[in-house]
Each structure stands twice: as C-alpha cells, then as structure tokens.
Length: 132
Image 1: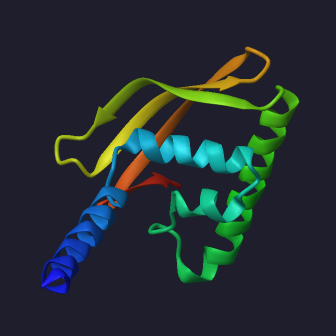
Image 2: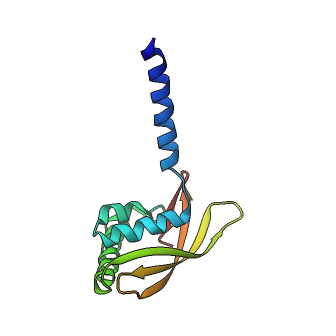
Image 3: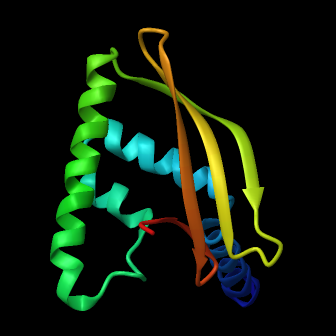
C-alpha cells in the first residue's frame, strides 16, 4: 500500500523539480553567468549563452571567443578581490516575452562595482545571453 502512494508522489516531485529549473527570469541567467565566470567554470558560463545565431562552421570560433570573455571576466573579478553579488538595475522584457535587456551592477569584494548591459533571448523556455 505504501508503494502505491510513494511512486506517484516521487513522480510529482521530479516534475516540480524539473519545472523549477527551466525558464526562470533573465536576471537569473545573468547572475549564473557571472558566478560561473568568477569560479572559472567556463562550461557553466557557456551554458548561459545562446549560440542559435552562430553557423555550424563558426561554432568552434564562437565558443573560443566566449571562453576568452569568461577568462577576462574572471580576471576582472580577481583583480577586484573577488565576486560579491549581481544587482539588477533595470529589466526590460519584450512584449512577446522572447527577448530581454538587463542592466546589472556587478559588485566586487573590494567594494567597487561595474554596470553591464546584457541582451537575452528565450529559447525553448530558457533565457540565454544573446551573442547578437
């Protein structure tokens, strides 16, 4: 009798967990990118990028450029005593919900900050940073 209720509850929990991981807000994608860059996690940072506009022939070059960008962001973070937080200053989502522009303040460990403007696109329900 216990197994009869256990499996449907387990399935419901799995569905809720997967639903919570997809989509999200564009601000979450920007924050995930900067956190990954701060940790030097190039793969996770690249996961936040949309390569939809990149042709198959240019994919290797585009991924290489993103790796360089991640390295530059990590160097900037390290030069400022580490990463503290990301604050969203402004968030504009298009009427159709497919694009967003986020203005963020990146706060560093030494108290300094920079402002970044990031364009995002929604692909298959997930926000990704646009290379366009």
